[in-house]
Length: 315
Image (cartoon, rainbow, N blue to C red; front, side):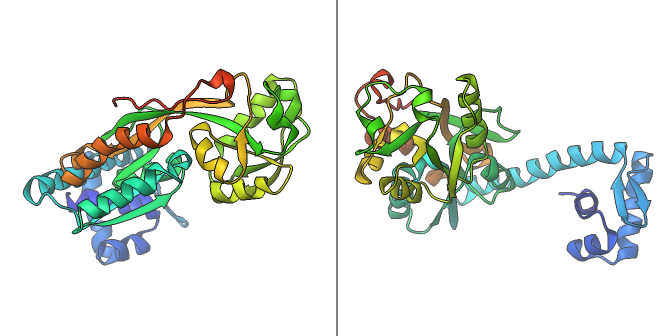
């Protein structure tokens, strides 16, 4: 990428010439001259200079947006060409959301590691909103999570499953014996939630509000679904998790509650950079995902009886 535009992006990000100069490996006077030359080229001031630092002007903000797109295109073109020349990757990083924590993500990481021994596979767990910037930046190669927005430029998606988020309780709980659980049946219960997903609280609040009930009583926030399953298995609390994990939850002594409809439902699957699609390890991952979803997440029955099926889909 053009060094001048790259320097401009660093200054825009840092908001300070001194720290930006260190980051790009230039002296401050040299960086200042570079920015001034860029302003002459565009015939517009790109920064407002203040005692507190460098603030983008409207023209500067426009250039920053364009330069970011150029930087992404440059980086991804390098990746695309590298995939044609070498065909292999030293590292392959997967970021997985909650629906993939205990079955699909570990399975695909294991298979890829066995089939591509020259590549070091890394598996992280986080929600899609937090992982997407890392995918765009090239720090993550494959993201498994909710598909609810149009992907940014250079990113493709492939829907694999439909995720239903439902409440779980321990098998001995009186709610587990109900053929159909009403929202008012859980109005006075306490909840353990997966803390990394901010949308959970908003979705729960909306569900309770739509049923004319007070906001849910969230007693605990935890970092891992397995921890929430273990806590609920030994208490009267409830938790939320994908219905597709019912088989895993059963190992903890939990069952999904039989609501008329899930708390919320969304499509979920693979996110990846277009420029990395031709790497053999990526092609293999995208081939494996529908198969793994079908084998590990398919549950007989229908949601109306409290059980749902995860349908593998073409992206």
